[in-house]
Length: 99
Image 1 (cartoon, one colour):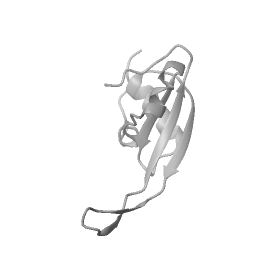
Image 2 (cartoon, helix red, strand yellow):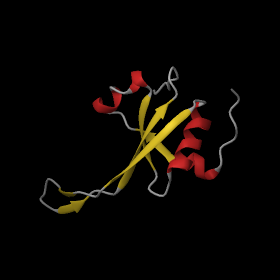
Image 3 (cartoon, one colour):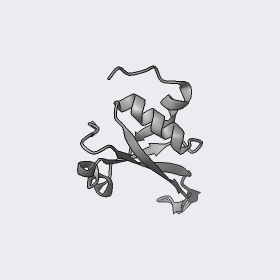
């Protein structure tokens, strides 16, 4: 399958794969988790995954990760930044090689 050129929105939609133990369990079933930009929607994520990896996406679930309060070693209060993750379900038999 020939890759098409990515638009600016597609190339900035997916930030990185989210490598966790829970996410790794879904790889055999064709389920992958990505960190995505907070301004993206499901359609943008679907088109970005299809064009970047050359696979067929069945559905996309999106979750916002709220900011959390943290403290540093010196006791200074801080806050983590808000983020968003996408769970992408692929067509049966297809997979993505994450390196």
